[in-house]
Amino acid sequence: MALRRPTRLPAFLLAGLFALLPACGKDIATEPEPPPPDLQRYALIPWPQRIEPRSGDFSIDEGTRVVLSEPVNAELQSIAALVTESLRAATGIEVPVALASGAEGTGNTIALRLSQEGEPASPEEYRLSVAPTGVILSANTPAGLFYGAQTLRQLIPLEGAGRAIPAVEIKDAPRFTYRGMHLDVGRHLFPVSFIKRYIDLLATYKINTFHWHLTEDQGWRIEIKRYPKLTQIGAYRKETRVGHAHQPPEVYDRTPYGGFYTQAEIREIVAYARQRYVTIIPEIEMPGHSRAALAAYPELACTAGPFTVATTWGVFDDIYCPKEETFQFLENVLAEVMDLFPGTYIHIGGDEAPKKRWEESPAAQAVIQREALKDEHELQSYFIRRIEKFLNAHGRRLIGWDEILEGGLAPTATVMAWRGMKRGMVAARQGHDVIMTPIDDLYFDLYQANPAGEPLAIGGFTDLREVYAFEPIPVELTAQQAKHILGAQGSVWTEYMKTPEHVEYMVFPRMLGLAEVVWSPREARNWDSFSRRVPAHLERLKARGVNYRAPQGP
Ligand code: ACM
Image (spheres, rainbow, N blue to C red):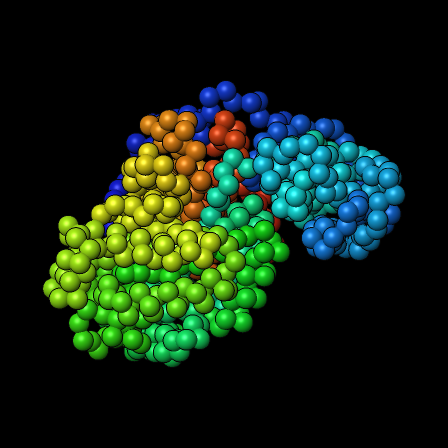
C-alpha cells in the first residue's frame, strides 16, 4: 500500500450521522438468537456457532487432571500443554496430563479427544462440554482441537480471578476457511520474537493465515541464497522520510535502516506457526514495489539505473522489466521461497505497477510484439501468467492483489480484493477464489479515531465498529458465486508503524472484530453482544502486555 488515499470522510466528521443509524450488527442479524443471559460469564470472541449456557461451574483444584484419549500423538500432547499452561497461569496449579482410563468427563478431568466419528462439517470443527463433573473437548482434527482449546482458554479465568470454568455446551466451526492477518515488514521490520507473538495472538482468535509481506521498495527482507545482494544491498536504506509522505516539509532522518530474516529464522517461524495451525503466505512483490531488488540487481530493470532502496513512501516508476533474465531471477527466488514455505499459496503482489518504463522500453515492447499483446496491461497479465505457470508446475497456487484482473486474470489465480469489494465480485463471477481486504474496512493502518488524538497514520478511518459491521459476501452474488469468497483479512501496512507496540495499537482491538466476522455465523453477529464481550478481552490482552487502543475513543 502506498498510493492509498483516504476514500471516505473520517467518522468523527460523520459522528452525527452515525448517531442516527441503528447499530450495524443489528441490521445484519435476520433472526437473532436471544443473547445468552450473561456475556461476562461467556465472554467468547469469536462467538461460537452453537452455545448452550448451563448452570454451575467446573472448579480447578489440586486433583484436576488433563486426560488424553487414544490415539495420542505429538499434536494432542502439544494441545494438552497449551491447556495446562493456561490452567497454571490462571490458578498456579500444575495440572498433570495422563492417559484416559475410559471415564472421561467425570471425576475432575479435562478430557481431550481426537475422535474420528462422523463427517465433520468443517475440518476445524470442535465440541466442548463443560459440566461441574468434568470437561470434554473433542474434534476430528488437531486443528479443531486447537480451536476448542482456544475457546476453553477464554473460559478459564484470568490469573487471580478464581478457579471456576462456567458450564456450557458448545459446538463450533468457522464460517470461512480463510481467516487472515497481514503484516508488512518491508517498510519497517520487526524482530522474530514479535512475529511469533503476532502469530500467537492471531491463533488465540482463530485466525488461521498470516500473510507475510516480505519485499518492498524500501527493503527486501528475506534471505535468498542465490542472490546475496538482495539482502546485502536491498535490505538497507540510507534514511527514512520523517512525517507523512504527502505533507511538507520533506525531511529525512539521516539514519540508515534495515535488516532481514535469515532462512533459518524463517524456518523457525514457519514451524512455530504450524504448531498454532497458522499457515503463512509469503508475498514476493512483482512487477512493482521492487526498487530494493533493483538496487541490488539493476540489470532486472528496463533502464540502466543505478537505483536506490527507497527512503520515502509511494509508488515508484522503476519496476521489473519483463525480460527473460527477470523471469529467470524471479523463478529462482520463488524456488527458494517455496522451499521455505510449505503452504499452497504464494502471493506475488501485482499491485501498483506503473507502466511508464514498459511503455518506453524496447525490451518490454518487443515482448508485447512477440506475444501479440494489446498493451502494457496485457503485458502485466502475461507476466503474472508466466509466474502462475511456474508456481502451478510446482504444485502451488498464485494469489495477487486485485490489479491482476487488469489485462485478463491468470486462470487459477486467487484475487485479494483491496480497492473495494467490486473487483472481488468481478473475480468471483469469473469463478475465481477471492479474499476480501477492502481498504475502507479492513486496512488496519487507517485511523481508528480522530487523527488529532492519534499517532500519525496514513489517513482514512475504520474503527472497531466498522470492522465488525463488515460483511465479506456482497449481497449481489449468487450462492454459487459466494462460494468463491474464501474469507477476509486485516491488512497492516507499516509506513507509519516503527515498533511492535505501534503495530499492536493499530491491530487491537480491530482484529477482534475481524475474528468474529470471519469465524462466527452471520446471523449471530450482533454489535451489542460483541461490544459487551470486548472488555474481558482487553483485560486478557493487557495481561499479555498487548498495547491495544482502548476502543472508547473520541
Ligand atoms: C496495496 O495496498 N497496494 C495492496
